Length: 328
Image 1 (cartoon, rainbow, N blue to C red):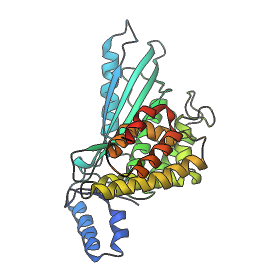
Image 2: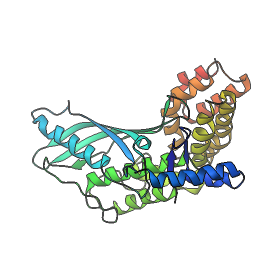
Image 3: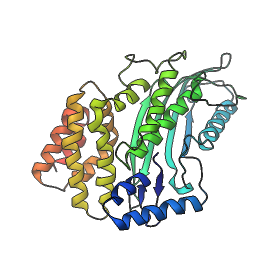
């Protein structure tokens, strides 16, 4: 079992599992790991993993009392933020910031059917800096569900019979699992498998987004592709880019950028070549485009810049204007 410990002694973000692995070769880190584990047992933990904020855009829906939308926002935000999704223990400052920006396209007051899209984003802080980096961002075009003003939300991952709680459970597991992956190689395996199991259990729901092959960017495709063995390089990218790359930059910018270059050349490129039909590399470059441009613009060797430019261009040519900045 992987447990996250953020900023216990040195305002550092690191997992106990990672400390344990490193500790095999370093007695000092081994001591820190033991102290950290004791500390986490002494200090009361906030059991909730997520710190979610919901925004609801209902501009396309006219003639409906705004109280319905306000009640939905209040109910769903309370449900996500006050539920313990895993057996991990987070301190209050360790909770994962995430945003659910929901756009309501249609609302049927008779059937309580909501037809929506949602942009889901999650981020984590970068070691020893005030900078936060996005580790997941994607638009769910089938964020549809039923909800009435006085509904009480309940969740059982073994019995998926409610679309709204299934949606929230899916993204809760996905976000927590991906967050863990940025701190330890394959660190979110257990949680991500729960996300996959939920997806399989949701197959009988009368809503789109759960089926295999319906859409190469739907919920099934995202988690199924991520756990596919052929995408192991993409999973390694999550650790190398964030933990070995961005987190290192506060100490040594050149070394951090070199780690990022290496993992893009070795892992992102390989994942795209091995699974060209998977949209995960494209989605990743979509929300990392500004950050990547800033990492390389005016920095690094020309050879390094050209290599990164060519890889990113081959994956996501639609962002060419951003990739051009890398060569400056």
